[in-house]
Length: 136
Image (cartoon, rainbow, N blue to C red; front, side, top):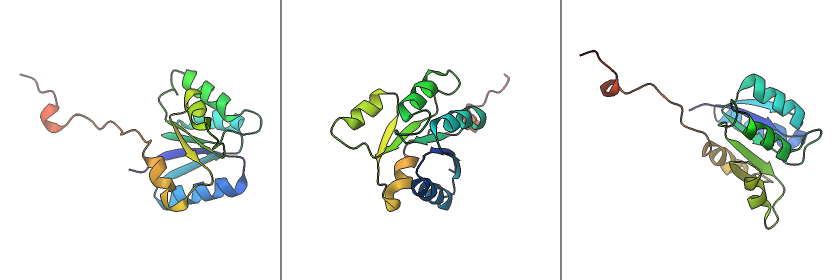
């Protein structure tokens, strides 16, 4: 199912590649070049998923995670780190900071969209016909 996915990434080549791949698989990518823009876009656009680098100008990825996960209207949006921080303990530190997932850079174009789609929450579709309320 197509989703609106916000990519917060300051490296132009990485941003371009992620946006291209997401669009090629039918998603609607939104982009922000720093954490400040990313937070503004999150509040305004309410994406289905956020992909966020850790090392960002103005507001870093950990600060983005803290802001998103502490906001009652935004905290249910899945937030996935896409980062070059790949040393022992970085994944655990990232998840402990509030991210719901972690994808290491450099991304693998053949598997990236599948990795991202795994974090999309199923959208509620109304009750099934047999579950709909009917007056007695």
